Length: 116
Image (spheres, rainbow, N blue to C red):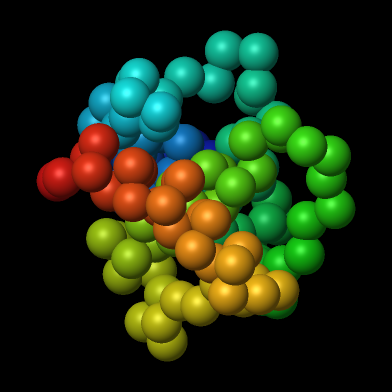
């Protein structure tokens, strides 16, 4: 389900989280999502690899301020809305404090900014 050769915008949005965010003007930090200068984030948001395989047990090695947290949040939200994860979704955190920080600083604002 990699988003190659999909011409219908709604069909493309159903399989590609970054395009779904763009098409629906999903807000991040109160502003419409924009990949300008961060095109690499598209691959972080995709649920499938370029050869069409579903990502399993993904681990991301990254530096700070890459946008990976919001990219994975977007992928999870997109996947939940489009039925890409019938088995459910779980995100592990190293501690309760980390969960609380993520919830208050990223998850809750993302949901509040995008009620649809």
